[in-house]
Amino acid sequence: MRHALVMSGRVVDVVAHEDDDVRVSTGDHAVDEALTGLDRLAPSHVKEHVAIFESIHSVLQDRLADTEA
Image 1 (cartoon, rainbow, N blue to C red):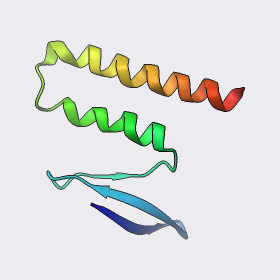
Image 2 (image 1 turned 60 degrees about the vertical axis):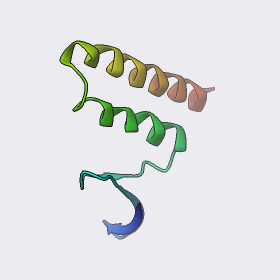
Image 3 (image 1 turned 90 degrees about the vertical axis):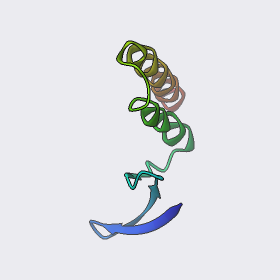
Image 4 (image 1 turned 180 degrees about the horizontal axis):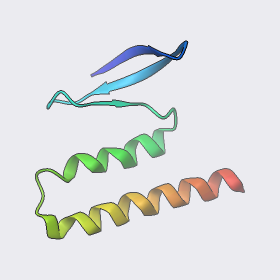
């Protein structure tokens, strides 16, 4: 579910999750999609966290490289 929220005079998208956590949109779909990977942490075993973080980190690095090109 998406909502609008005013922060520091700006309207930003807010994504509400089923567990009532709220994540503010970054404005970049690829980054927002990567960050949804954080939702996989809680239900997963701690041993799986490294792979989840590495996956998110990889997407963020690729996105940053795209903006620098």
